[in-house]
Image 1 (cartoon, rainbow, N blue to C red):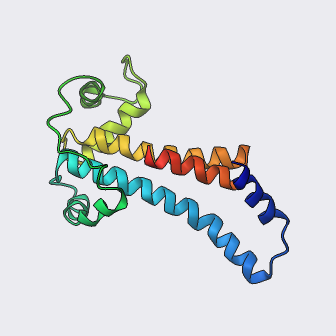
Image 2: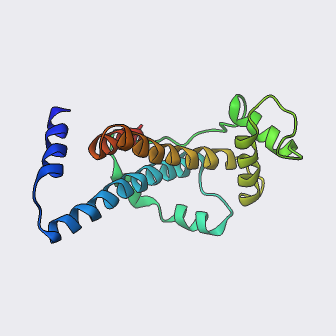
Image 3: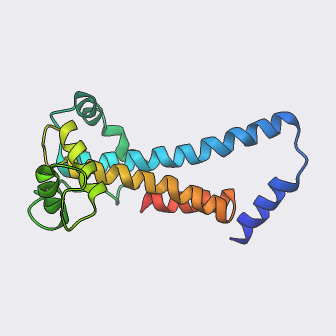
Length: 171
């Protein structure tokens, strides 16, 4: 942590040329963007391996069919194993059931309406396939990486935000 604080202090107080300042501004956008992209790719690979290739939408199917190189994003010891049906019990099947039964956004139910509505929209995209709940969860997991970066950067510093977002991305 002390090393990051020292680097952050140096970057704030050093006199950089205009070219160096421009590169720093680019890096301050590129680094968090790469972390968010990394998080999205890890989650996409996990969904592809655990649940197989979807039939629709066609874009997702095409991306899944060409997702082989994603295995190089992490060590060989960290591999997903193809899963059985994860939608037999627990929260995923309950969210799917409620989303399919949802008539309006504020329909009475014992769960929060926003996530159930998001699952309902995801079901429309995935032709009512159960994997829709997993894609919705992965999407919000990537948004959590973005939120972690923004919050940590605002509360502490850019580099703390980077470390926090990266930790969230690989978790």
